[in-house]
Image 1 (cartoon, rainbow, N blue to C red):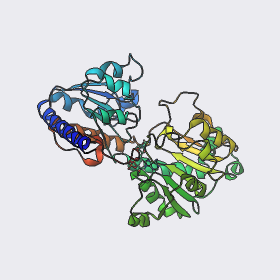
Image 2: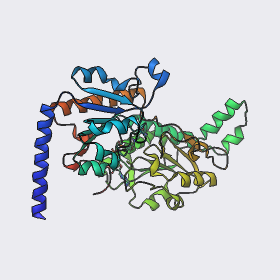
Image 3: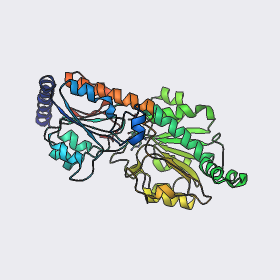
Image 4: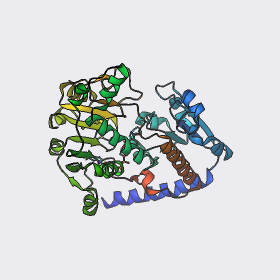
Length: 387
Ligand code: NAI
């Protein structure tokens, strides 16, 4: 045990020294590959759409002026894709959760020069983090860059489900007017119990923003307990058992990262423990919920509604059940494309944050600790699973 701990420490310090030496001597001439989403005409007309292939996170001039090669594309799937063809000699890969360039173990095996993976945004589940840790790759994200953007979207989604907004608006667009058809499934948020799975940056901001709505209670489920003072500030009570937690909530919002412990966490079994007619909002990651089980629960009225912007496959195929599911009264679907964390305000923050991470890396300076997901000692955060 002792010997292996010592060997580990020696390896880590050698790696640290190598990284520092590398950063100083190789600050020029790196190959940087970015996978972003296509912005089309919108991106040409709106330069603040920084997270697009067209606007390249605003990094090209800066990177090229320092002698780096910067390659940008949205083409990420399959052996002949841009990502797969360029990974073998890339030094740095930048990806975004909005159009995830999946950095699987197989792909990382091919990436012989890779040192750093940067997520322009928050949520690095599209990178095989265990493989990255084993290979001493660093994984950084721009922590906090879009947490307000998502929290606002969660509050909006809770309200639009509880108040039955979407079918009401669709009725107006159709030219109809039948108040009772909408009102028979519209409620107030006041007096309801709202619970968050994951009480990190976004989960806490959601509860903060819901404070004036006079909800009956705020609950949270998280293996990282909040400090008692923080629980008091938020007015939140921790429930340690997930089934017990969901059985007490009128509204559940999912705000935990996707990892082995959260994949398909919300499935048929768990949904059976929800209050009948509860509402579920998931802006964290699509694969935390089982898509078919959620669609069946909405169709049966076990869930009165489901809303979110994240999908288990992105872009979501045309036939995805979440596009079309409805509750028995014809509402309960608040799905949108993955955009809650990519408002123009958020794009500026995550583009600037990406630049800062690159600059620190080039200059061998320490990174902001909160941005480090995998550092040179492996996992640097407790958010991606208990270990
Ligand atoms: P955070 O790291 O501040 O908080 C995550 C919390 O989830 C932590 O308190 C952690 O202990 C908890 N957690 C992890 N596993 C859990 C489990 N099995 N059960 C209960 N709690 C668990 O992260 P932050 O900034 O709040 O973001 C959360 C997630 O939201 C991101 O990882 C990302 O997947 C998603 N996100 C989505 C965006 C969008 O545009 N839709 C944008 C930004 C983030």
